[in-house]
Structure formats: structure tokens, C-alpha cells
Amino acid sequence: MKERYAYPTIFNYADDGISVSFPDLPGCFSCGQNDEDARRMARDALSGHLLCMLKDGDMIPEPTPVDRVVVRANERAVLIETL
Image (cartoon, rainbow, N blue to C red; front, side, top):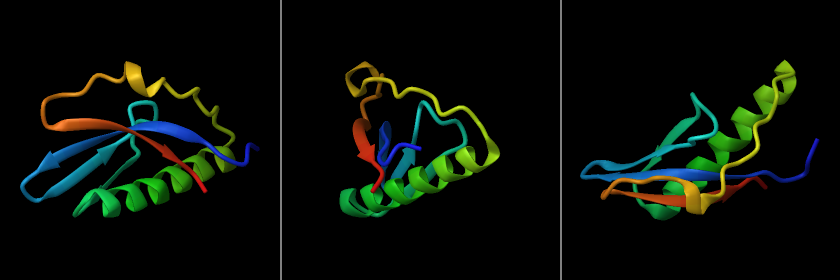
């Protein structure tokens, strides 16, 4: 098992907060009230999702380069790394 993983994350900004999704990891979502909170919650979601995948024996996908992630006007691509 690798010590660290880093995946591109999409921050979707709305009036009620920031929705977080991982294009390479279907089903991995989170949210936050501001950028700092969204980053913290994204890191937790990523770590937990990958841990479950490893325990289940699932293949861990290669991350898409963050500069290749397509985002909309209210979105931003952010690289999130596990601790």
C-alpha cells in the first residue's frame, strides 16, 4: 500500500456551500462551508474511500492529472492528498 495518494477533486461552489466530488472515484463525495472546510472534508472522504477500496481488494485507479479535469464556471479543480 502506498503511503500517500493524491487525486483531482472538483469543488462546486453554490450559495449553501461547496460540494466535493472525485472524478476518478465514483461514489466519493463530501462538502464544506468554505475552502478550508471543503479541503479537510475532501481529505477525510478520500482517505476513507481508498481504505474501503483496499480492504475490499478493489483496484485503485490512477489519478487523472488535475490540469485535464474539465470544470464548469462555478467549479474549480483541486488536488487533494491523503495524509
